Length: 116
Image (cartoon, rainbow, N blue to C red):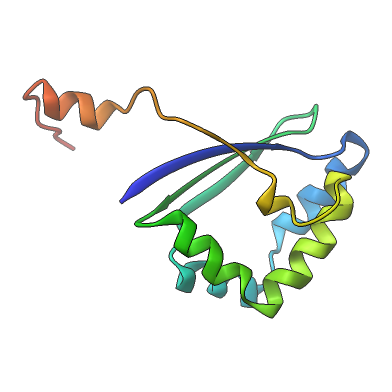
């Protein structure tokens, strides 16, 4: 499973609306994301509008294409675009950040097993 981190920016005047929308995401969209291959997906929003996302997927490009093809995602992206203050779908404007450190990977490389 590959790990992905990305950033975006919510318009500062829309932070409350963004938080409210994400406190109760439509169940149909939740299922579409999971069925498309999005795993361990989370979003973190700073008070200045910086949005940081994390997701795990075998193939995020394929997972994005699968969810983008759903009608529920098109409706959700249209609503979210207004909160980002951009044209188009916010999930197509993310900036992906390469991973530079992962604890478990380095422990495994050092020969250290994890104990819970």
